[in-house]
Image: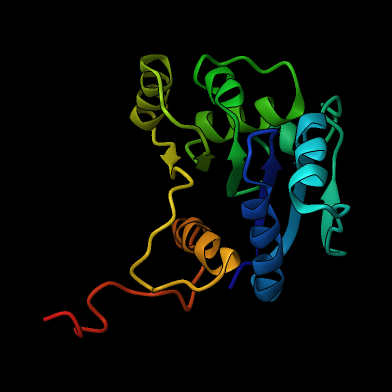
Length: 192
């Protein structure tokens, strides 16, 4: 089985917990992953510290790139990265991706994923959504981008904030092609 090469990007929207849990869960899939390219915006670093009260600590197999590094492999369609996840995704980043602006590495990598028809998953964390937000998401969905809003579910009866946030992360991982042990609707028919 060919190992996966994925890109994880974190922007400055609230919801650093989702990124932290996603990074943590990817440690469970190291046998499936060859490489993880990692990008984080300056605003995301500030939100991470504010919300999580800790420094970002990446696993060894993550390679962090600067937003100006257009010489990195993820800036080109000739690289074989198969999935990109932007979690959380600010509405500003989502809008720039939707309109094809590629003036930093995160945006260029997203543009590459779209043009090469590879998996791009955006996890917006915003409410309420304006008509502009909805139109941008529609434009992206029309070209095959998966929009997975950071809206947790309660079917699994989560007892902690981490368990609640994991309901979103599990959906992101499933859409990325990873198997998870997450709650599956209908597997337990106690509510009949």
